[in-house]
Image (cartoon, rainbow, N blue to C red; front, top):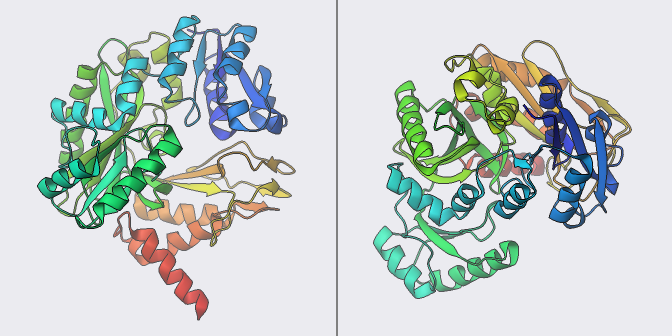
Length: 454
């Protein structure tokens, strides 16, 4: 086992990794920017190293600064968390060159899965169902028109190196394709330094469902089931739950088996998430893979009792999967996670500032992952997530009731948060009935605005 791990991240995920390190008897080293000097992840780490000014490019994304901190602290391994450098294959290679274990997949696997059209082709080759679309990158609008005519409108072009909705356009006719293709290409190049695009058939009302996998470095792989992630705004997830109400036990077993085989074939190791869109006919189609721990990993932890972060560390340290899991995966009950963001619940504008009052809910089946506290400051430089409120109930109905209660008891004053938005979602009849897709928030917010006008 490792003696000391550096966490190349901040906020709640950095604190989450510190918790796992402490339970495994490993010393944890935090890195922090000048804006995070008083953060809880700095306070609870065994050691902490300042790596630069507030801007991420000058601190958390500064690979030489992170590696220097790791060498100063003499660590055995680096855990990247999510976001920031977590899917940066170059960073993983630098870690290896410096004799530091990167807690994640091998660099070549990160690179393959990070280039989405390559990931798509790899999954297709392995027998994972994918949406109809282009065979790789599309270079020109003329080539895009040929593919669109073959696939059938509507289609969607996506940035090969991207995410979060940037470099993405839905195209419904040949007439509008050239301008929209060029706009997506320019946006992708500006956002990711790579303008490569690929094309898929566009599903009008899909559900977004992802499968959690764990793989050791000896070819052992297990699927831990799915998470429903369809409640999202502008391709950013707001709420996740497990299991999905539309995934049957037979479907879960079939997709899980395919993924276990596929992960072995591509040489995957550590934690990963394979994302699918479910079409109107209930068929799952692969869209992308995230080669890291997810924000919503706690949902899976709640229903399986598997500590995914401890599993990541143990796998990287050379443990085999049977020794990590101690038995078969058993799913219990239903879990829901609400992402509590520092933003206005209606305008969706960021809300940085000082938190004057902070009370987190507790009780049976309630978990809060956070690095915030009363009198703490939410800086304006980073992601707006300040807490993850997760509940588990014996079934979905109890989980919704428990989440409703927990949201009422979650008090944050001094800044705006998304808590009121989540409270409204919990009351929505369609959500409570499990009747939703990725367009849910468009309808939901449209109706909310209409009510406010009256």
